[in-house]
Image 1: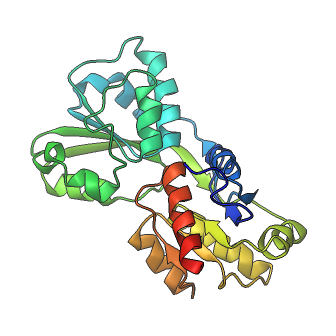
Image 2: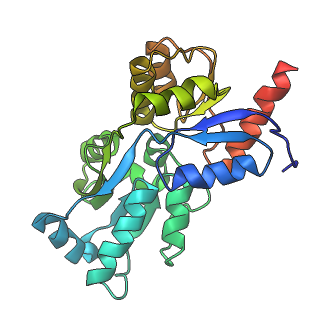
Amino acid sequence: MISQVLKECKILVCRPEPSATELTKALTSVGAKVETLPCVEIKAIELSGEARQRILNLDSYDHIIVLSQHAAQLAVAAIDEYWPQLPVNQQWHAIGRKTAQTLEAVDIDLVDPIRDLSSEELLNTEQLMHVKGKSVLILRGLNGRNTLNITLRNRGAKVDTIELYERCKPSYDAVTLKEKLEEFAPEYLVALSGETLRNLCQFADSANVDLSQSTFILPSARVVDIAIEYGFNLTYVPNNLMPIDIIRGIASLQRSKV
C-alpha cells in the first residue's frame, strides 16, 4: 500500500461499529480525512428456546453458514456455552472475509476461507450445489435476506436459522447530520449494505442535503440499483470489501479524476 495515497480525500464511513472504526483507521493511515456516520446499529437479541435447542443440536447439521461478522461473534459466544469443544463433521461456510476471520480466530475450519464470498457466490460452490437430504443451519441477523434459505430448500435441503441480532436505524439530530453530510462535504460515502444505503438516503432527505455529487462505495450491483432508485448515479463496487480493497478502489477513482 502506498503511503498517503488518499491524502486530503474526504470520506464518510457509514458502516456499523466496530467496522466503522476499523475502516476509519485504515483510511486515515493513507492520508484520508474521515468522518463516521453509522447508519445501522447492531443489537444482540435474546435467543429463543428454539434457537438454543438448535445450538444444542449443532452436531446434527451437515452445513453451518454464517452470514456476517456480527453473527459470527455472537454465535461463537452462544455456542461456547453449550459446546466446550465443537462437534466434528460439519462444513462451515462464511459470507465475507471479516466473518471468516472471526471464525478462524477460534479455530473453526471453513470450506473456503480465502475468498470474500457473497450469498450468490456461496450458492455456486460445489459443497452447496448438491444438498438434497442435507441439513443446513444459517446464523444471521433478524429479518435478513432469504436468498440462501429459499435456494437451499429448493435444492432439497432442510434449512433452519438462528437469528442473533437486529439492525436498528440510529437517531441523529439535525446539527450532526448537517455537520457530517454538508459541512464535511464528503467526496466518497461508504455504505456496504442496502439497509445502510437506505438509511443514509433518509438521513440526507431529513437534513435537506444533496448527496448527488458524492460517489457511493457500495457492495454489489443489487445495492447499486438501490442507489439509482434514489437518483444517485456516481457509484463504485470494489472487488472485495476489505479495507485494502476499498482503499485501492478509491485511489483508482482519484487517479481517474486527474
